[in-house]
Length: 382
Ligand code: NPQ
Ligand code: MG
Image (tube, rainbow, N blue to C red):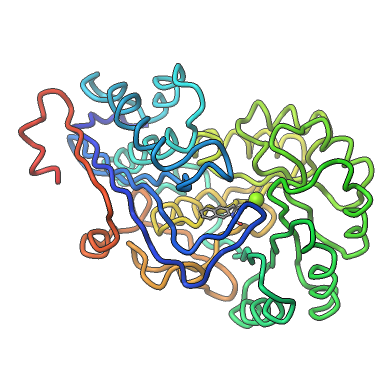
């Protein structure tokens, strides 16, 4: 991989309204607050997305924490130290514990810049072997069963290849059974609990076993690897871990323990797309299927996810929906469904362009952090 010399980083907090509220077992979101990082290098620029939420509900990271870690720890480790190979970013910030989503954003920005300098697409660089990826959709907890049916019908009419519904105690077996009965046995259907249960709910969760689900995602807490292994012995439905899998090392442990039969890969959760590829490789070596999760990404993160999901071990449809699943107006041209699939971008780097005007319209906070000696270029950089 080409090394790049960063002249500075632009950081922006965006707030983008959602087309409809998105409710999960940890709460309800009406807008997406997200950070974009722009790396300006000697020869190019690159974008990265930090998928933290405003509150530490999905994981321990959150927007304000990410902003702080970027400015006080990550940028200083990467600016003014000469050329950097993007493959070495993770090592350079390894002494900073955790903050994986934040690290992933900076790594992606530098990868995008380096790939622009090489004129190579992110998909080609990661080892993609497909031009399109099947598109699944994640359906939030709904105010009623009728609303759920109408929403799922609409997504199926649009062509989505797989439906995932969010579950929590009180909204689990009944809505899932209703979907199976209404839409038939051929519907690719799975559920995501976002850690809302405990092992003592095993009997309840067993009621999902005769509904023909592809998988049940993260039924128990993030650090419940051993309990997930115990639950797996009591369920026929494959367990797929999301929150728990924070690195390739944990992925290997979870597979070995029997805690996970499928893996949801999210680059932010694991510290970057390079670590995500390592999880793909570990899982594939064990015959464990993986699929690409989603964090309500803008076009920047969505482009990167599409590239990742085109790797050969991604054998299940991902949560890579069309942009209009979440946003009426994105900061890039929208990703659209093509017969239930998303096209993998082919242009250099991430292959998407961030629209300056749309970006400005959704920015609520921004900064420019120049490399030492590049302070004068700050105005140009912005
Ligand atoms: C999951 N995502 O697989 C998550 C978690 C999630 C697409 O189901 C705002 C920002 C709200 C990020 C809600 C999907 C969110 C979010 C849920 C991520 O577990
Ligand atoms: Mg999940």
